[in-house]
Length: 236
Image 1 (cartoon, rainbow, N blue to C red):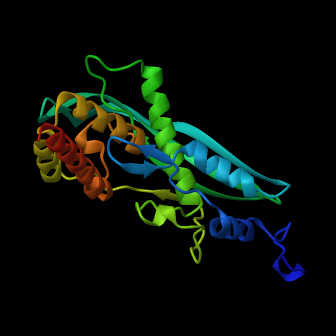
Image 2 (cartoon, rainbow, N blue to C red; image 1 turned 90 degrees about the vertical axis):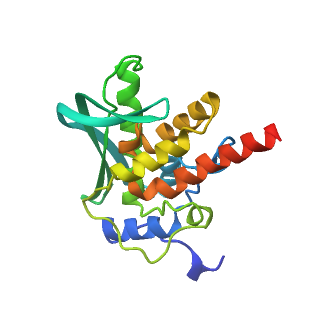
């Protein structure tokens, strides 16, 4: 590497540092789900990638806070049927902040806890999973990480404007899409159904169809089809 190619050790301000990190950060989806045959990334993986290129004097912090708590209506998938349930629900907002030379830039993302119902895991586990999901997308927003399946296999992202204090607002899956997906999921075996929902919860923090982002519909549908094809091949 020539002197002209040596990376700067200092930056004028936090905005220039963020721009540099967005271009240089390597945070591919390095986790593999063998059942759905797809890769995914974790909040921990993004944090490690950020630390690898974080210069001296800079810091990355992540915080959580409860945004709302109150009665609500939602849908859960239960033995092939998307049914309406009522209960208490908590919204958790995570904020990732980059600190440098007295300046800060933040990005936030929120996630909803699953509605409490019979058989729900320990509330602490539910809150932890929801917080992890929100943190993952807050970090993704801050560092402008592309969440499409193919783009995650490329190197660092370039030419992307930094996120400055913005909050991601996801559009959830429509009722009609949820019903169609429920019909497809209904074709899965009990074991494959469990595998699918374990992946959905880990990837999107969702425990019912109405909590799945609309942008994830194609990916989830492909995952279901993959499981169906594998089951068909085994029975052939």
